[in-house]
Figure 1 (spheres, rainbow, N blue to C red):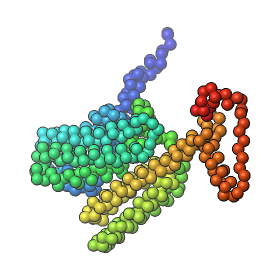
Figure 2: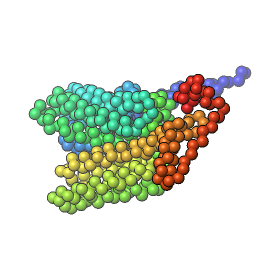
Figure 3: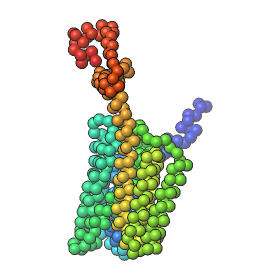
Length: 392
C-alpha cells in the first residue's frame, strides 16, 4: 500500500487553511465594524438629540480606518453606518419604516464616509510630502483638515437627515454646530490613538500598510516609563474629576470651570516626559472621563464649554509632541553646519566663525592672536585649480 500524503492524513486541511486565511483577512473589517457601533453607542453620553452628539468618536475611527486600509475600509464603514441608522430608527420608534431606514443609512454613509475619507486623504498627503517627516506639519494638517472634514460631515449629515424626513428644514441650522463640535472633538481626541491601533492590527493581520504611515516611528521621543505614566495619568484624571465635582457643587459659579483647564498643564507634562502613545492614551482617557462625568453628574449645560477644553488640551498636546522632535532636528542641522560629513572636521563656515570669536576675545583681553595655515597634501593646488568651493 502506498503511503498516504499529508492531505490524506488531514482531510480538509486545505479547506481549513483557506478558512483561516479568510478569517484573518476579514478580522480587521469585523473589528472596524464592531468598534464603530461601540463608539456610536458611547456617543450617546453627550447626545444632543437623536441625530447628533457633542462627542461623536465614530468619525475618528472612520478617518483612521481610511488612513490605514484605504478604500478597503469602505464596506465595514458602510455596514456600520447602515446598522447605526437602523438602531436610531428603532430608538425613536420608526423601526417599521424599513425603506426610510435604508435611505437614511445610505445618506449617513455618504456624508460620513466622504467627509472622513477626506480627512484621511489630507493627513496621508502630509505624510507623503517631500522632505523629512515633520510633526508640526502633520499636526497642522490633522487639525485643519479635521475641522474641514467635520464641517462637511455636519452639513451633509444634517441635509441627509432632512432628506430622510427625520427633521424639518427649520431644524437643520440647530443641528450644524453640535454636529460639527461632536465630530471634531471625537476626531482630535481619539483619531491618532485609533490610527496606531488599527495600523498594528493591519500589520498583525498581514494587510499591506503604506510605508508613509511609519515615517514618524523613528523620530526621537522620551523613553517609556509605565509606572511614572500611570501616576501622572491618575493625577490628570483626578484633577478633572475634582474640577467637575466642584462645578456640580457650585453650578452657578462660572469661575469654577477654570479648574478644568489646570489639567491641560498636567497633560503637557505627560507629553514632554512620556512616550507618544502614552500621551495619546492620556488625551483619550481625559475625553472619555469628561463625557462620563457630564452624563453622570448631569452637567449638560456645561458640555459645550468642556468640549472646547478637550479640543484645547488635544491641540496643545499634539503641538507639544513636536517640540522634542524640533529640538532634535535643530541639533542635527547644527552638526551638519559645523562639521564636514565625511571627515568630521570643522566646516569652513564654522572655522571663520571661530576665528572671528578668537579675534574678539583677543581684543577684549588685549592679548595677541595667531593663525597657523598648513598646506596638507597639496590642497592648495586643489583650491588653485578647481576653486575654493571644491577645496572646502
